[in-house]
Length: 421
Image (cartoon, rainbow, N blue to C red; front, side, top):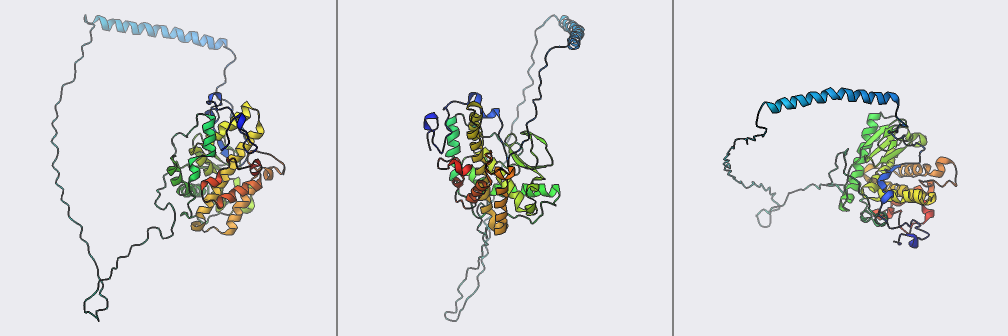
């Protein structure tokens, strides 16, 4: 890893900055949230608007309130005076409660252990030679995991609507380390993992059925990534998926239309029901919304491993302090393409159990290509904050063939800017 800082900038990693405590660049000053693709939806105005001055009516109201308080205060003083005059001794006598002595005799417990009875069934074999039957072991133990699936014993938790706080770095140096050398990168991609994907039509399913379907897909994502997060020393908190129509308000501001988003303020995922309108030719395939949720879950992994807040701090530093929008956008693209890669690793993990066909894998690749900045804008030279379609598909493919999460380290020095354009 290169040395971060003004003297340690390289062509592949130009994100140097002073190794300072956060101060005004504290990442908490801006809650990171990551959408599947760019959106123009703004944030709501501040709720508190300071007044320009005092009006005469407000002043009169305050005077009236003061006049009303005077008789109340006088009344309380009279009551206190009467109470004090009713007894000559103003010393409060404290009487302790009676002492209760409780004698507890522990019950006598007699434990009798009866050894289990073991019944062995023996089947006689050929007795021609000796006339003595030879016992044959007929014990049959069914394999607990006949499919050879990984993480089969992992207990998937319920959605956590009150998750613990996300890890937050304290210095830029620590943030750089979390992005580039995170312990999570050592995790092995488990293949295969048990996950059944019902054959539903997402475009015609009811909102309730689609909500159940997507939340069940998060259970599959937890089975793939939960053990790896825990083994790396992180909390594995399961997010819920909230479906919405149009633009709605959330803890992260307005949810964008035709999009999906992970909000770090409540650590939950949001999915617009009209998102498939962007690629109507694939809207009927059940794998498409699952792949979208897998990308958003990638952001949940980034949040729970400290990568998301670390990247947000550096992105904010370059945007606000250095006025360097190009580098800020590159950091954003690396974050998005890492989530694309993690989504691809999930697809790899569940392909066997979900019965995904080569055609369906191709559909997922095409969807990720279609949501590239250049494809959405129609401008092949557009330099946005999510990445071009070809690169997004490449990172998805990288995940689909990855053996460890480290293959998705889009922040590594070895990853050139052209690979995350």
